[in-house]
Length: 129
Image (tube, rainbow, N blue to C red; front, side, top):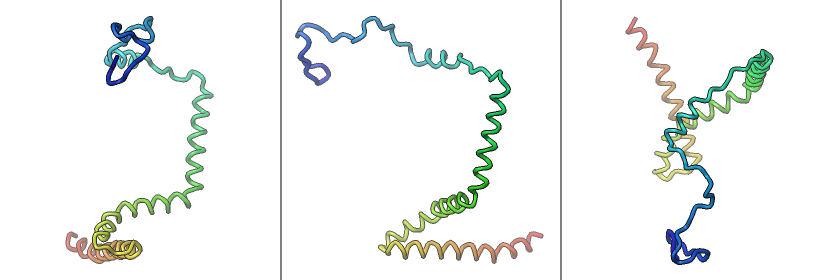
């Protein structure tokens, strides 16, 4: 007999497939499950030692980030620059330039734009004051 496109050899032709667990309670609708989950409240810790241990953990994480800032900061800066320069590199990819040339042109473009903005901003500020 074919059930959902599959052939089952364990059933007789006249029987319908039954659920594997007949004693299981019927499933609750999704809304009732969410309402039951919302009613459960997480109690606040009654032991002050828990609060102090959490505070010490946060301080340890902040200290580790401070010590590792000489490593983390260049990585974050490289990631941000990659996000900013990626559209220009993709645009130059359509011209079928080699990858190194595309990257060099994107960096030169970013340096030129920053130089032009540094030249233009003082003139703009002098006009507004």
